[in-house]
Length: 202
Image (cartoon, rainbow, N blue to C red; front, top):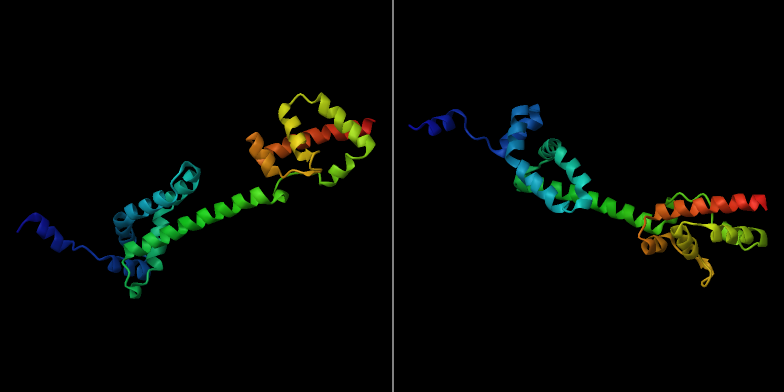
């Protein structure tokens, strides 16, 4: 009898279900380690597929670091009565984990693009009404003429669109200047501080 056959009899290959039952019943570490060794490739494949792209690198790295825990959790909630292989179960669990992350990122992105209240702008839109007053408008115009930062001039021009007589959304300004929304707001606020100081000195 060959050595490989002897070893197989002494250490028979355990089925995934056997390993999972040992994990569920006894939290058997050896069984968990064997399950991790068998199915790490599937886990990494799913994570790398669904979180491809450099903008998902952080989330992908986090999930890859959580591989052992993810396989353990999948083993604990695996239901053999559904007639699904554990590898398929793990792949589905990993897929939904990735999709949940992508959906959350999408919602956050939509909020930051559409809800301007999320950004730090201590000046309400009532300032737009205030600059129409003769004193404030004079200070506003004076500061704008003295302003050296062309970005600020563009931001102010776009934000307080004279032609349309309404405030331009921050997301449009950010796209035009190829800046972040918060970056545009910060420069705007810097300018408004100058105007407020000038107004107090008038």
